[in-house]
Length: 102
Image 1 (tube, rainbow, N blue to C red):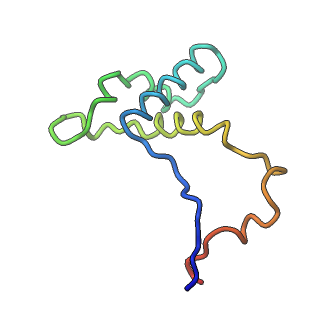
Image 2 (spheres, helix red, strand yellow):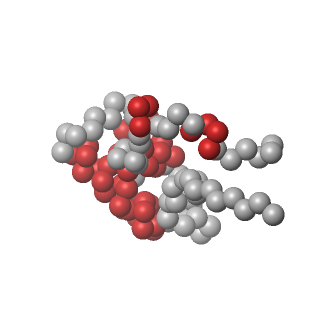
């Protein structure tokens, strides 16, 4: 029997991580560290309210407002310190990825 260990990839978004991500993004924009030029993201930022962090769908009439661009931007900003430059990626990177066809 062959046992494999894979690193779990991804970013979990929940009430706790979203509030922290949004706060970090807000601070970066307000402090001039990050400039957002995309009008769609700026519109989502303008329409996002603190109450959105508490929204869990179902009974909320605004539950379809997911702010996908804003959340994606916040995740990208939160992950900026975890990204590696091309020179830091191991040469055998592709071989180390799980291959579902095997």
